[in-house]
Amino acid sequence: MVTLISGSIKAQLANSKWKGVLKLDNPVNVTFDFGKDTLTVVNLDDNSVIETMIYTATSSAFTLTKISGQSDCESSATGKYKYQIKDNSLLMTVDEDTCNDRAYYLNNLQLMKN
Image (cartoon, rainbow, N blue to C red; front, side, top):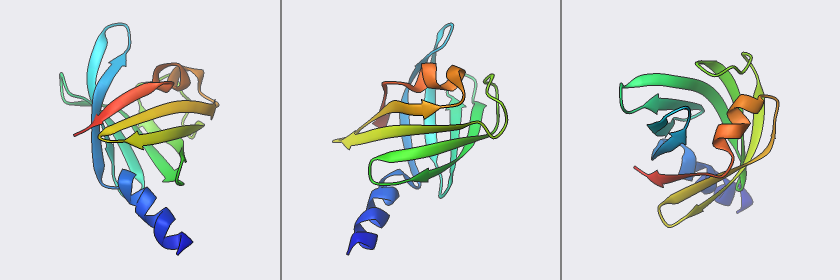
């Protein structure tokens, strides 16, 4: 039973897309595209990939590991984030992240189901 519950929770992130605004130097409209085990962050304004990361998820947290992207994070920089899904909203809060650049922009980020 527990396996089914955690599997269904991860399924909430797997193969889902979430839309929001990253407050960089200028606000950027983005989608967070969670695949089976890869998260791709896409700039909707110019359709460019901002970051590609591997993720693993539990019922209330996920871990991100950078593969490639535009942030100042080192390749393989890892971050742990807590998340809540309520209605069609995903709220992320940083637990710990070796990349301050990513943590700064993702902490308290709210995305809407796309």
